[in-house]
Image: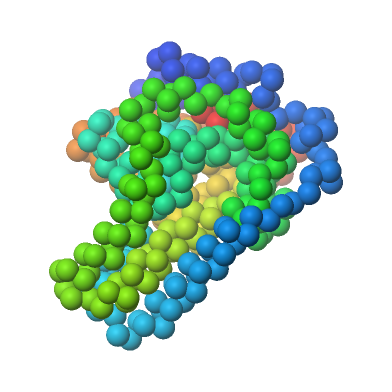
Length: 344
């Protein structure tokens, strides 16, 4: 049972929500620490995907070149690039992450369409694929079935995981994750079917053409600054997978590696309260402190004020205090019992 933002108590009720919750109880896909496939990483040989390596090298060279051109770039272009990065980030944090992966709140159709479109600005794969990978990450965090397993090192968890073939466990466990809620969502599936043209248009083409047309920015400068904006969004998201799994405090659960990291909260617009988030993944704020270093929560609350977001799920202060007593600093190192009212 969870507490809504308005103070009322609620629990999942719809058929598709129950299906997602039931997935947590399925013994066939639980993260069994005795599973030899989960424990043994030595048998897997890393295979580098050189096309992806080349792509990221080119992107970062172009991004660095954009910084070199900074003295000549129009102030409007800089401001527009920052806006694109923020919108792309919200498409990931408020959209793919808190709405579609964790179902921590509900959104009406206009907001769902808006979040889908700005999610394309981030160009981090379709909502469907992103959500699948993130649900696997939560269920099998820091095992060989975790797509960006932080135990394989800082670089791997940050961006290296996108430059190599997935571990077989990621594919096996990911294929068993329940995605029926996404498959029944027309907004998600529309984006998934048309992802490449949507993402290229909204992430690169339009951010390049708008400065050229409206304030006469040089075409090449406009293009490389669109790339820089894209890279800023990418590294903001990636820092959650890497830095927030390695550096920071663990006030809610000392048994897990995800940590509270204020720097990550700043660059990822609220996603750095990671020890809390992995303890309570269904909390729409992903933090105990709501708006503090958490632009995403402010955005969701604003949408709720407008009537576009509703059923925001949260955790009571009493429940948090009790959890800290059981698994926080100074407690015995005993893993907490998983909740049946959690979406990954």
